[in-house]
Image (cartoon, rainbow, N blue to C red; front, side, top):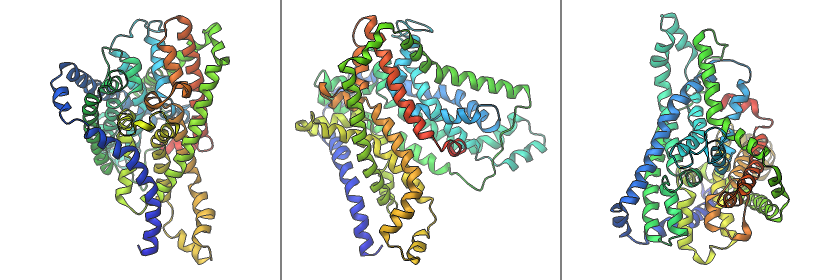
Length: 513
């Protein structure tokens, strides 16, 4: 790059780099430097070691559960044609826009003290595992589906001609292609489960709390920043390892657009129909039942529907919408600027996923430690929202930008357009669909944000998520019913965001998933 281009690139890189330095690097460094001797106390504490072991176990157990469930579902979606297939492919995006609080409340509606399906399971480890499967089964299915569509149809047809049966074709032809995609998906599932907070807080209880919940309790209730700092670095170490593994497998799982995949066809055998029924049952039980349970519980809430008319609810809705709108605007600016800088820098591309690698709980603990004078300020809370949201914008915009023809800028310049005209009349219209997708996912993240709000919010800044959590913590059937009604409202917001994401682009998303 010449001097002018270096200056332009530096200007684009400065804003997101400074934002990451202030909101991620500096807080985590403050946590690391707080008390170096806390490691010894934590690692010699039997209670903390038990929490760490349970956190690792529940994440690993979720990986073991979603593999045998998700691979057959992905095979059905990639190989079989059936009514509603396109809808199912689109609905696999729904858990990615559904707040974790909704999933947790849905599991409680099924298996809690007043559960619809199997009541009284609220003090068992199975609730957290089921909630993990609800959220992470689509992750594994998406990864496996992308692997299946990379298997060349000609290779499978040759194996069939040579007499290989379905099982042999799967192990000898499909599995070698599928393996790096599955490994990457498993790494993501482990990462999400290990660093998850909302589900563990709602479903783990006191006996099955994870390390993230322990950090929250140490900071907010016991004021033990030394112990919390040691746990933060344990979490960061494990999540960094999982993230690096995911990146390594991601480089091996390369999509080849030149591959001619197998076209889905109707089931031709009893085995095909059995697999189709299995996939329908798995998706219903693992993904649909919690959402239906919320609808049933809210429908039977009776007089508790009056909660929608109360001033506390109206204020929570208003806070949710205005905080989300402000954070999405900031995420749009940060995301587009970051994408522009990352196009010319490999290290900027790598840093783009940094907010995904660190949990909001860990960052919030560092923010509380480093900026105590700002912990009750609205700008800091909105900055946390933007930190969690902008990577979605940057990722989608950068991917679309990379896919543009390399010489379109020179062609525009040849027609007399300057850089600003090219950006406004050519680049932006081409990037607009990706920007829309990224902003929609960013909005979903902000609407359902829970962890940072618990750490940094003030009572007058209560959002829908924290209001639901408050009602769940109060005794009485009316409070429980109110929580269900508000959860249904939050689900409606998430569904609206999902429809905005899916609208007009469903066909494209179906086959690219």
